[in-house]
Image (tube, rainbow, N blue to C red; front, side):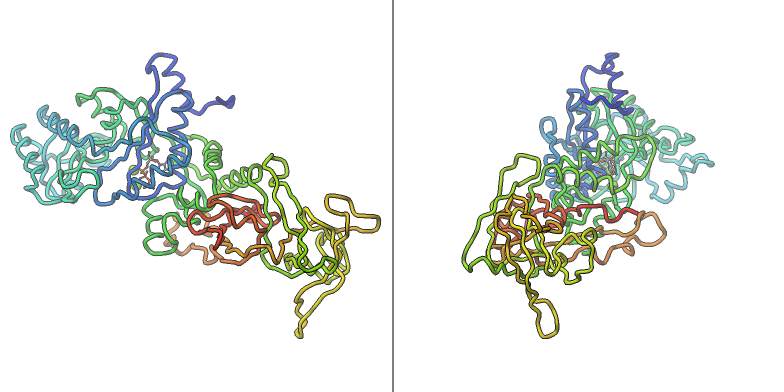
Length: 552
Ligand code: ATP
Ligand code: MG
Ligand code: MG
């Protein structure tokens, strides 16, 4: 429970429970298995499962699988995995709209018997013309006047595969003059001679979304059927079916605004294009705004749930700022991720007062405030620091450059203060390595009088550290509204959204479990790649930088 004011859906549910309209609530998340789930779906999952959790109700996971040509088992599998990963458990078994096809068929026959449905032999073009538009009333054709017996026989022929795809459909007989176009004799069944991933070749007619959705809700005992705003105009039809069919239960539909995010595409169709045309490595590419892409990028379920809370539930469309999502993950990792050290542009440091072969074990906390234990860091004669952390420019002020300057001191994180004594260069004047000496007694202790380190920098043992692959990801799209303009959204793909680098890391990091996230101190948040990381070939993905570099 939270003390913040509840959103409009929570208010509706509170009222329904208080007034006894329902005794408990039952929601559902109803994806069509025609792609991987994206961040928008994640907010819908959090909303539907979250409401059930909050009010002690239940939430179903239902595949709205009425469109065989675009659906696949691999999407069914990934969707279940995503919902579980986000931390939710559906009530009972997974449901499939396709498992109700027999009932839908019976209900279609019921409507025909009642004189409320007919088989229409118009093709799509003439059907659209004869339906009219908001200024023009629809036109009644001969098929609409056919008898119940003829319609029963025609529908049976449709089901038996005697008609070609597109040659006819079953339509509800409602009102061709209705001001709401959805009520002008909507299509209930269309012919699709396609195998279905669940029902095989049993059917060659498939129900429309409108004829399926509310009836699925009714069969499952859904109390609050929450969908996005574009279905608001379909609500009268949703209710018409519930009123005119022998349903076991009467669900109600409520609408909320889709989650749109700047710099982000939230359309499965367009995301599929990125995959099919190889702009990314797949649906799970860490640059994809899919749940599994975000997962591989290093986002945590907690951060996505937090983001979903931040976006909230609205009744009007808006565009959320991607920096909210980035803030949620940065915050989560800052609070919870273990620390590690990585050197991206190595510069060799020789500690001249430490004999070759000697290893001193330093200890460092895994996290500055959270009790996550300690790690050991081998301190050896040869180390790496980042090239950017050393300069020969002795004129730089202490304030401007809090790192190592020629002839000066710096502290190595969780180890000694060191002093630079010599700079070794090649014939071109490039720095090859630097020679330093450590100041004894400075581990975890203040340095003696006169020794003034400018700052603290990260380091890795050159002999004991591990070389790793870093995949430095950036936003995939550079335009704030990539798919809202006239131009193809593909033109807004960031050509530098992935840069692969080699880096040196402290030895323990090679043994990180896949999907373990870290803060590499002073560099950013990284995650061991879910699929490609191994102790032999460590791979880390940049989840997010330490600071928002896109902020204006
Ligand atoms: P897409 O256009 O990406 O294919 P969709 O709405 O067709 O999206 P469905 O599989 O039908 O995808 O969606 C399952 C559920 O997720 C629906 O209840 C839908 O309303 C919800 N949903 C989809 N996209 C968003 C979004 N951007 N924000 C919030 N909810 C969404
Ligand atoms: Mg849909
Ligand atoms: Mg869709």
